[in-house]
Image 1 (cartoon, rainbow, N blue to C red):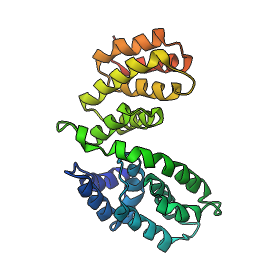
Image 2 (image 1 turned 30 degrees about the vertical axis):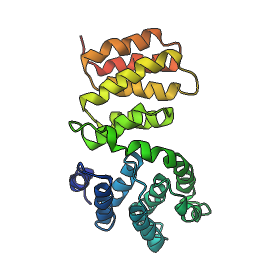
Image 3 (image 1 turned 45 degrees about the horizontal axis):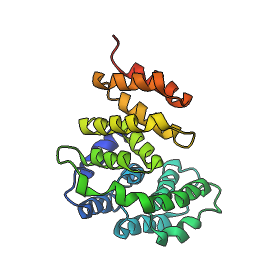
Amino acid sequence: MRTLTALLSLLLPLLASAVTIDEDVQRYVGIFEGDKALHASAAESLGWTGLSDARLYDVIEARLLAEYPVPKDLKAERQRLAWYIRALGFSGQDKYLPTIGKFLGDRDYATYSRHALADLQNYKRWNPIISDRKSFDGKVTDDGNRAINMIRSNDFQLKEIGAKRVYYGRLRDEPIFEVLASEVRASYPGATSSNSDEIAWMVKALASSGNEKYRPLVQEVADKATDEKIARHARSSLDSFPKR
């Protein structure tokens, strides 16, 4: 079986920076028309690329419908189909609602279907924000620029997705952390129970830089945040900085 590192080494060149959204779409179409071993990871990544083009999602839908059902003992194959379902939700396109809905009655795929239905309504709003190239910085990777778009948005749920992308995706473009710092500074004093999780994630993502220049802000949040959840995460995030 191929290792995750080997799969990523094959996938990453296909997801390199693109000149246009159309080029992004064509690269993904190439992935889903090719090696199935790459499909689950590629489908998951669609959650932060902002693509809605039916040329891409029609390929995924066709794969899903042609290959369902998969024998229960083929766990990896079943997981791949589950990610096809989630990916249709990332499209933000109502045309895929009937296909997603087909799996609500299948106990093995019902959870993925429910998530996809919820995702679809969100990504209808989010995809134009994530993929907006007008604000892209040529010195920042495409992934980094998309994360910046998410973090700058007015939707705290999308801010959280962007922060998690930075935290787990190990994005390290300096402009990302400048945006995170600005958003944390502006949002933590007025935090409420409705956005405390999202702000906490932005603090964690900021601290993941390990850059000393951001330590004072994280310390400020730890000391002054009135929301205990945010303050607690800020305190634990201080461990991300070098020991003094």
